Length: 363
Image (cartoon, rainbow, N blue to C red):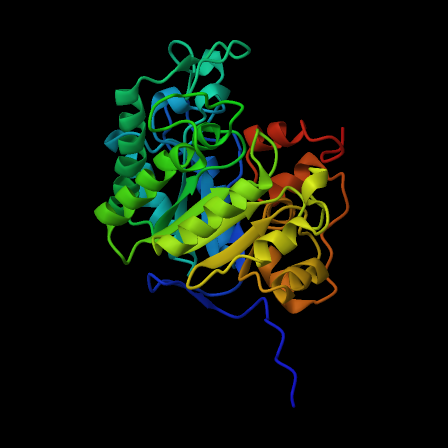
C-alpha cells in the first residue's frame, strides 16, 4: 500500500466560503506603528503589506485594526472604526489582491490594554481593573462593542477585502471576556465559560449574518496566558468549529513546538491539543516560532492546514517563495541592520518598533 503524500507548502487551500488561498502561507497580523494617528492608512503600511502579497503570501493579513477609537492599542495603528477610513482600505485591499493574495483585516479592540495617552478617558474592560485604571463596560456598552466588531466587518467587505479575522487572543478585549482573571461579571457575559464566550459568539454570528456565507471569516485565540485555561480554550475552539460559522481558526501558540506551561496539561504538546480538534470543514493554522522550511513542513505534516508567519515575513518579504524553492531554507541570522529591514519594506516607525525586540536589530 502506498504512503499518503506529504502536504506541500505550495498546495492551495480552499475554504468553506469558497475562497482559495494559493499556498499554505499566511502573513501574521503584526504590530508595526506605521499608519497615521487617526487610523488612516499610510504609504509605509501600504508598501509593507503589498510587498508581502507580492512575495507570494497566500493570505496577507493587516495588523490588528481597531473597531472603535477607545480600543486603540498602539501608536500608528491602522483603524477600521469609521467610514472616513475607507479610502485607505479600498487602496490596500485592491493592492493585496492584485498580487493574487487573499486580503484580510484583523478586527481588534485592546480593552484594558489601551494606553491612556492614546484614548480619551479610562480604558474599558469586562470588569473594573485597578492596575490599569480600567472601568467596567455597562451592559449596553457590551452590546455596542459587539455591534462595533460587526460594523467593522461590513466596512471591510465594502472596501473589497476577502474577509476578516476576529482577534480573541493575547489579552485584548474579547480575550478579557474569556478570562476569569479579567471577567468577574454577574450578567449574561460573565461566570460560566458559555457566558464568557458569549460576546465572541455574538460577534461571529453577527458578521456571518451581515456579510454572508461567501465572506472569509476567521477567529484568533491563544490557549495560554492572560488567564486563559488551555482546556477551556480547546472547548471554545471546538464549539466554534461545530457552529459551522468559521472558515478558519487561528491558534496563536507563541511557540508552536512547546509543551503547555500549565503542568496539568503537560503530557502532550500544545500542537497536539490543536491537532486533536475535530476540525470538520474549518481550516486550522498556528503561529509561533515557525521559521525554517523544515519547521514549516513539520507543522503541515501534523495536519495543520496552513502556517502563520511573523518573524520570517519581516526578515524576507518573499518568505513563501524561498521556502517553496528550498526545503533547507533558513531565514537570515539575527541581528540584522536597519538598512536590511528597509530593503525588506519596513518603514522607519516599524524599524524603530523592532528595536524593542532584543537581538533583532543591530545597534
